[in-house]
Amino acid sequence: MEIILKEDIVNLGYKNDIVTVKSGYGRNYLIPTGKAIIASPSAKKMLAEDLKQRAHKLEKIKKDAEALAAKLEGVSLTIATKVSSTGSIFGSVGNIQIAEALAKLGFDIDRKSIVVKDAVKEVGQYTATVRLHKEVSVEIPFEVVAE
Image (cartoon, rainbow, N blue to C red):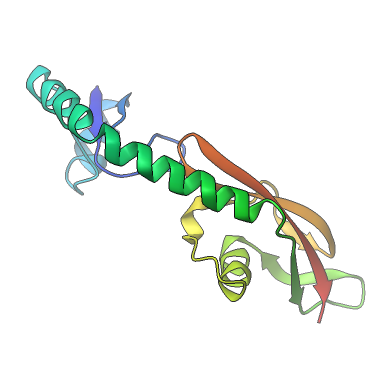
């Protein structure tokens, strides 16, 4: 089943992408929640016209994302958490803690656009990927230390 996404969905696609999903996922979740519409020929024509009209605006959004990526290039985070005597963390460090640390530095980034590959459960050096645009992403190194 082909659908047109109305918003960014992690591991599926970005807004206005035409993607193929299983029909149950599309009919039972994506379409009823308003996250997608069926990609009929008329909907595809409307999407093409909208994209043509918004090409300039989308280019500006991409340039803004690239500017933010340039600012984030030199950023290195230090996240302090409670640690047991063996060096393992109580709980884990995830995208929420990274988003809060970036907010303290003045970067307002949605936590859903931050991806940490492995579960961070020990003190050490790690990297997180921040997806600012579908073509722009930045890797941010962060260090987890004991409080």
